[in-house]
Length: 291
Ligand SMILES: Cc1ncc(COP(=O)(O)O)c(C=O)c1O
Image (tube, rainbow, N blue to C red; front, side, top):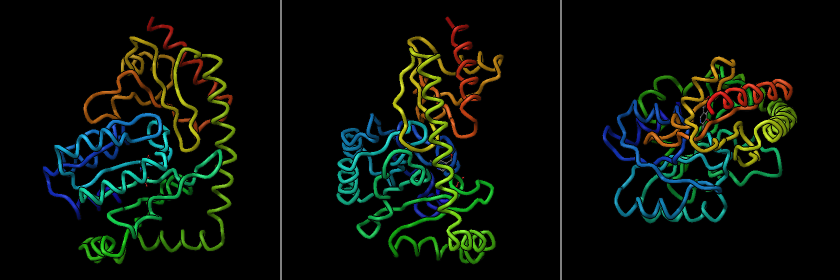
């Protein structure tokens, strides 16, 4: 909903926006709903590559850059402090909005996550998005937008929000009391404990059963981003895996240019470690059938 509101208030059909390659696939769907023209910016290890952004800025004037800076979906990467600073400088120099989707920020399993982009909102053209989906319950359909007063007023004064007295006032009031009674903190702490065990279980299973695949152990969020062995196409593997009753998202889903075909995204948050091992074993059986 936050992305939809941003597109509604800050873009027109045909406008250019920048997205990470790869990025959140429903983000791509929402941008398509608004007929935006997407330009991919490469990512590597510590997130968005500033050189790739600078190069694209010589050619295009984006309305905004959509970035998932912390525990990215799908790669699990986190944008380094140095690149964050460079990104903010470029947004000022070239006058584009940074839309930072930070839904995984609170799900940090080793150490502190970087400061949210929201902390910089007074500094400029930054819109930070958060959601209760990953830290409380997705069915609430509630999140938040943080930005400086000028940008926030664009949302507040839009017909949709003005007419409804906000986005979701009844659910908001319930969630507000959860926050006030510290129920959210307790829930996040519980999730972190549970997910830490699951991430370790998934990592152990991958190392034991699929030693040939490459990935970086995520420090937070929901996902393992796996580089498949040479010559394996993720969509074909997905088809093969159906017979073994194991599912994953193929990499091409996260690309706005049909790339990433040799990657898959695995999520570990829903299952217990022994079930995750079973899933990895099934994935191995599917891979063995490809060779
Ligand atoms: C980067 C990112 N943004 C947004 C969402 C969805 O959030 P919500 O449930 O609040 O729409 C997800 C969930 O997968 C996500 O990965």
